[in-house]
Image (cartoon, rainbow, N blue to C red; front, side, top):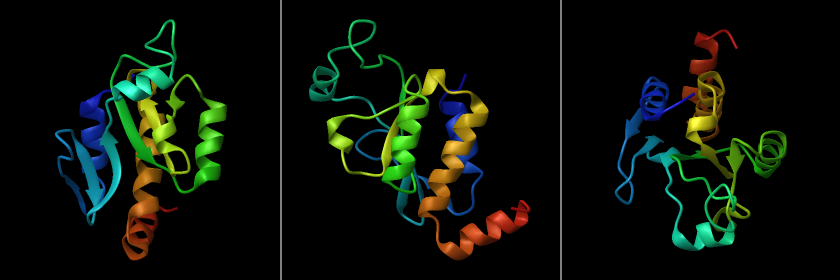
Length: 135
């Protein structure tokens, strides 16, 4: 499964990305627009999730925040793979999901990071990236 080295390698390989710490944690931005970030849970979020696993729903492992294109995409991820993707009340109405990093396969992590980047990158940069990959 995936780890921070994978996040760094995938995000860092995308055009115009900079790793810029945010609130003492790791974060990756494209042209100053946040698209993936380290996101430890806050005490209120752990409480809202009923405590840490296995009795509650809050994961004890590493968590990655990921932008998604829209709320429909968010709902689809949360419903299709709840063992990997989750959210907290803090992110209600926001196009972002939280990822249990130790549970996501690297290929799925790469897809999530690239999709997040595409949703935040300038259209010209995203189009050039997709053209280069033949997409």
